[in-house]
Image (cartoon, rainbow, N blue to C red; front, side):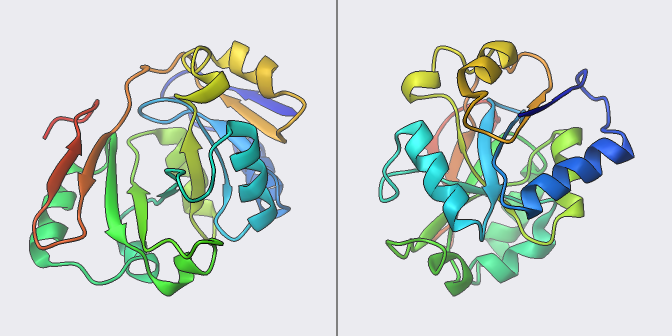
Length: 203
């Protein structure tokens, strides 16, 4: 397992960034900091990686809350179905930040899942390291947060998390202790935004 440690708001060096991109493009899975809790992820089209993540986190695919990480809203049209201008303006006011937006998934996304998911969580995080990585990739990161299951007691402590998963993942990015707060979840599948869960993000 490769281990990269950074202070909060400290950028990855170019060689570190290229190493992360290379690991992900070769089918690797990693644990990384976000603007809420730590998450485990891989590239969206890495079906083997997705299955491994679901197995490691003990989350059945049909019940798992997997989210796609994007740099901004420009890429959403490829992975989500059309949404209203009201939804666009509402989301635009909140990003980047600790929010998970639920959108209707496009065919590209549904084909990546055995159960043909009709909805998908979308994240545009306020985290410099993560934004650096996403910019360099040709597809979104698909991930699940480490705030439940066996890792729930470790999710704020990067060292303990890395020790727990060191034999199962390819890369760990240590960005310091997480806030421990889950994201605010907003349903964007209809004409208006609906609050599903209040978390770190203010609405």
